[in-house]
Length: 322
Image (tube, rainbow, N blue to C red):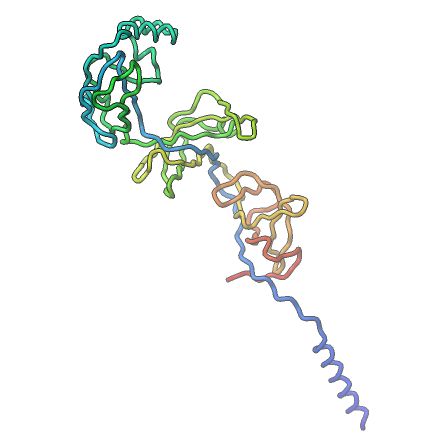
């Protein structure tokens, strides 16, 4: 056999061997990316609480009386000045002493002067010494605590009227977040699967404290938000709120799915470098909806890989999903 033929055969064998036994190259991971853009974002704080009516008043009588007629039931609408119930005087030997006894126990001198409502404050909002109970405003009867023929004790709550023409959310915030909230700030309130635009109309003048289930205590502040359009809102249901405290410019934010942590709890993202994924350790700031502020480690304009934990490693080949 000629040398040239032998050389050709050997060359073919070598080429076949190199092709057949070459390690298989891994398939590039398919990834999605977002561009890190520096823009403006709203800074928000979170709160939770419940929806409540615009106003509620509890009604009672100053002395002993017997309910003569009860004209309205719970759930019925009532107009301002409309009679809810009427009373007949009760024969009770203590009737002449009730005001003095209550004044002594409450230590409120205004009761002795006949200013019962002022002395009671929020305990019973409207106290009547007349023979009928009337509604202080247009609303809905939300409680009737006496039946016809029953005797009413002095200062007991006999009826409740609520005004649902406007709806508010009374919420609690952590002591730290509470310090950033003020009247007039916009907010979003979520309740019953619906979202409502709102505004802060009241901020508590003090921080309060309550006990926790573990025996400790937590400090919190209260705020009241008014819903712009409460259509469909169920008063009494739980609610969460985001109160927007400021607008920041030059903020770089990426989706939460782009940020991961290593075994040392260091946060990182993968940055697209050509056809490779490069790990980049970052520092994060506040949350903006579904995004997280990146305060260090990423530059505006860089392509950040979403789903950072999707079987990626530093330097691995990737293919961007079209």
